[in-house]
Image 1: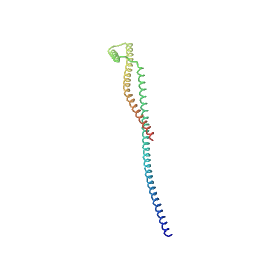
Image 2: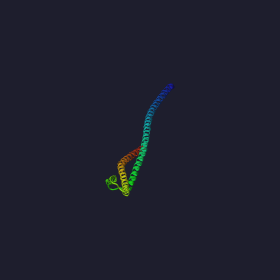
Image 3: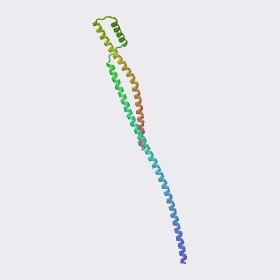
Image 4: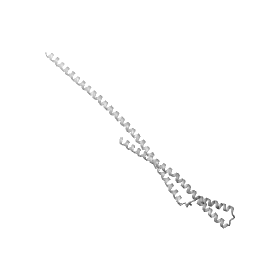
Length: 193
């Protein structure tokens, strides 16, 4: 009998051990499933990290590009402002020159008087005194005529500068607007990073 008891006890022990093995196999299976789940989650996190790194790298490149564009635009706007300032100074100088000129009201009257003097001197015998007086008058009239021609050139220059200045102002406004847009874009990129 005791042998039977031992056999029964052994069978029970074997049965219990098999149950323990089954439980352990179940736990191993659950652990393997959890490990696989954790591995998938880890892979997803790695994938997200890779995407984020790529996005950050892309944003850095974009920020560098935008920064370079901003520097170039600032340089261009400085050049445009300087050109505009140079034209404004030129206009002031030309207007100052124009103010300094003593201009007659009628250029044609001056030309007509010069022609009359030339014709008179060519067709008449004149005394030295009268000849000297006519030459002085002609010299004075020629100087006036030169000032008139200079005034006309200055007026033409002033007329030519106005459209140039307007074009420069327009270009400067466009560059400033673009610069504002790029600075906003740069701020957005910095916020995203």
